[in-house]
Length: 162
Image (cartoon, rainbow, N blue to C red; front, side, top):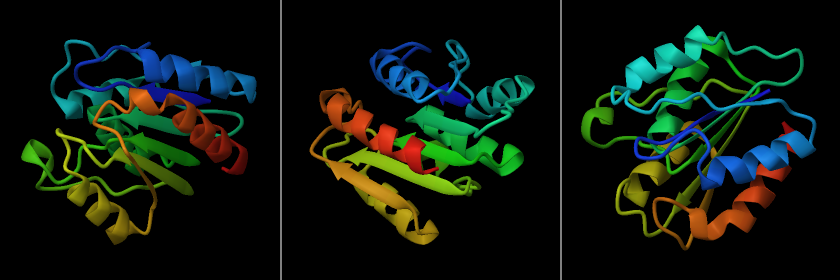
């Protein structure tokens, strides 16, 4: 089962999620993408995800973008998924600077844009280094939508190997 968490300014079935959901279903995963629209507090988004009681008889993957990546990270400390797939995760900035959630999954992959103007690449490199996480940096900005074919390839590979 793959649970997607969208970012603050997107919706549950935006371009990236639709694209990655297709990859997940092709590989036999069921997909959920809760609607967090209107919930600006990231902790309340985590609560909403946990209320869904994410479980799987197979592998459980949390995938998120931007604030959704933070939500997936935070939830991982409670539900311990098999994998975390994080796009442009919000770590070490603004209200997220005091405590970055610890990744609690067997496998974690982070993808970030060199030209991200929302979450500076330096913070994500530091977070990845601190936790020994797989990190892919792309010539892209925060949304990463110009890198969909590469995101699809990385997600497919991640699902095959988790």
